[in-house]
Every structure is written in structure tokens, then in C-alpha cells.
Length: 579
Image 1 (cartoon, rainbow, N blue to C red):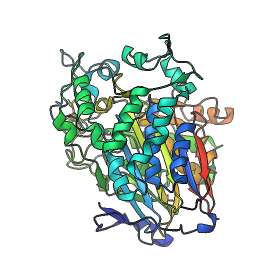
Image 2 (cartoon, rainbow, N blue to C red):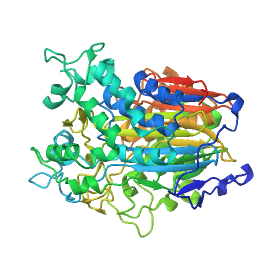
Image 3 (tube, one colour):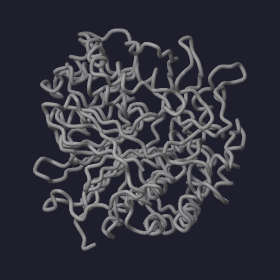
């Protein structure tokens, strides 16, 4: 497992920040017995549902590590928030080791089956399918990666037996839990993207009608699946009867897929070098492509060429700068980012300080036409205009030793492909590929290819100081808007000096090309008026799907958490135990 140590960085040299790789032992270093600030250290969990938070806290109280808790949280989210993530989906994880100040990235992104082809989302006339049509197919499901990633991480960084981590979710699935409002909303007959008959058959009242908020619901099929996972490990999803059922389900009409048992059995999660770059006096670390975290780093670097930090959140110019930097970032993302194992991604050129300074000079004083992607000599790519769905979740865990997990996890659309196996939902992650493999500019970097991971906007964040000590972790669901949600939070905490909760609660503004939307009801009339003078007339209703969760260590050593009020998540501090 490669791990990457952040060497001490002096603020006067922060522009030359580097991350130095070190050779890892066969097993990751054991968590430290005490954290650097033991007197004020406590464990903490922030996740999208109170039952998921309670599951993580239960594991921490038993002496479990942050990764142990993440396994328990994911298992519970698959039960109580199945529309967003689950064991049939994929994930990216950032991990901070408190003893060594090492930041590590893990890639559990789904892969296309070997038989996938670049034209598989084109109709009989060679035109891209509609998004809804493509989602509800067998070919939309990628080989799931979340559980393989978690099993690899837990095998190296866990403290409790694997089998114990599923106890909270198994108990809730067998004994029942009260249906959350969000789950009920997505099952409602009038929801804009109606649930499939298969989803309705799994999630319903005894009389067959849709579940309502507050109903008691049990999922014995899911409990049985979790018991097998607990007994035999993650391989329960990749070989044997559950794997056979996954393959069978993806081969059903309409538009059957090509997944095989070989595709499942050969899947491996990757331990990869994180990308870390300076922002203010800190270092922001994210996963490399196929995550779009590289573009989040671009976003923050472009904003650092402006005076947004001096203006604050009540100044319309701040949000104008934010919108323009967002448009520049997405233009590059849609042209250049894909799976680097298949397409060279010019990461260093995208993050070159001179290149970013040139991009920042394009911001201007008034909203103009959508900015083009930056021109990188020798790199000719088509533009991927894919719109990602918002069925995703994020969690943050710190254990009593100070080790931290920041993890974004998804089944892609609401209830994924709409197909189920063993009480859980199958993802539709392959619709994150470009439906068009080429355009007038050339091949699209994010085109479908067998064995390839689709580009993702998931970008879990860990922030450290110039000595490599943990400062913050955060992330969000929200499809392609994740990058704007994360950037807003980073600006709020580190430029505007807000608390984590206050930064999360800032209004959301999403700007990608000509598509600019914002939370009109959360912006002041003065900000809205000022933006209109700049040419930005915010449209309501399409920018409030964030689900930000974060944790921050304040300068005095105390921890503060934040959970997005737009969803159902909470923060729980877990006092140290005798373990």
C-alpha cells in the first residue's frame, strides 16, 4: 500500500508545496495510542442519517478504528438511505494517519465490465439515449467497488473483527427502523423520477402501498446479505450466489449489460497517491482522477488569485468571483478528466501555477459567454457534457487516536439502476460515462471502455496544516455540483473564518457553462441584486441538493462538526473509552 507523507512546510515556501511518497510496509502503521492533542481529543462521527451515525459511534465505543466505523456506517446507510449509497455502489476514501501524518487515498470507483463498448448508450440511430432510459438498463451497472475498498482498508487499518462491524445494520434490518422522510419522499408516487416496480416491491407497507415517513420497516433480505458479508468477507459480493444474482440481474432486459463473474471476481480497489495543493495557509488533499478533485484544487487556486477572502459572504462580488471560477473549473473538467489508466490526464499542467493564473485573469467584471477549456498543447479531446445524478452520501469519522476517514459513496442516481439483489440496490454508475464517444474536437476522454472507471465528481477532502497535522475533513453528495459544494465550504472555513457548520449552511451556487443556479431563498436581496448587475440572475430550485458533512480541529485543539440541514445528517462526539 503506497502512503504519502506530508513533510513540514513553512508558510514562506507554501507555493512550492510537495507531497513526498514513501515506501510502505506490507501492513499500514498501527494507529497511535494517543492523538497529538490528547487532552482535547475525542472521537466523532458525521453522516447522513442518525442511525448511521449511531452505528459508527457504537463501533468506536467498542474500540474500533475510523475505518471500522466507516464499514458499519456504510452497511447502515444501505439500509436507511438506499436511494443514495450502499454495498452495491462505489466510493472514494481519504485517510489520515495521526501517528505518521500520512494522507492516503483509496479508489473504490466502479468499473465497466470488460464487454462494455463506447457506443452502448447510443440508440439504434446512433443518438445518445435519454438519461432516464439509460439509467433503467442492465448496462448502466458497473462492477461495485465500495465493499472491496472498505475490506482492503479495514484489513490494514481496522482493529475489530470484520464480522462485528455489521452487527448494528443487521440488528436494524431484522428488528426494523422508522422510515426517514427522505426515503419516503423518493418512494412517493409523485416523485419526479418514479421508483421502478422492483424498488416498490422491496420498499413497501404490508398492504403494498408506498412507505411513509415514520413507518416501521424491516429488510430481512438485506440482513441475510449482511450476515454473509460478515461471515465470509467482501468476496461475498464478488463470487458465489450473490455475485451470480448480480450478473443475472444486469443481463435482464431492457438493454441487458455484459457483466460476468470474471468482471466481479477480478475487481480490485486501488491505493493511490492523493493530490495535495496549498490553499491559504493549509494543504488540501483529494483523490486523483478519475475523481474530479483535481478540478476542486483548480477552483481554490483560481479563487486565491482574487480578493474573495477580503470580501466575505455578504458581498455580491464574492459570489460573482465564485461563479466565474466555477465555470472555468468545469470547462477544464469536462474536457480533460477521465480514468488515467486509460486516458492520460494532464494533472500537473492543470495545476501549474502559471496556467491557473492565466485562467484567473479570464474572470472579468461581468458574466460573459461560457469560458472554453484551457488550451494544453498536444492534448486534443472532445467535451463530455454528461450530467451526473445526485444519489450519493458522505461521511467523516475520527477515532480516539485521531485517525480520520473522509468518504464519499454512491449508487449514482436515486435508487441506482432501479434493480435490486439481496435487499440492496444496484448502481447505475456507468451513466457517468459520456454517452457520446467522440465529438467535433476528437475522442471524449470519459468515453466508455471495458474495464474503465467513469469520471466522478466525488471528491472527499482532508486538509492539513504546514506541519502535516490534521485540520479538517469534509465532502458532499450532489453529482457534478459536489465540486461547488466542497469549494463553498473550503472558502467559508479557511477564507472567511466561519465555523464548519456556518460554512456548510452558506447558500449554494452552481455555475457550469450557461447553467447557473442558486438557493435564492438563502441569498440576501442585496446579494441577488448585486449578482443581477453582474449578469447573473439566479434561478431557484436546482442548487440545494448538497449533503455536506465535515469535521474540523480548531486552533485550540477542540473538534467541531457540521451536518447539512438540507438533509438528515447529524454530528456525534464520542467520548474516549477504556479500550
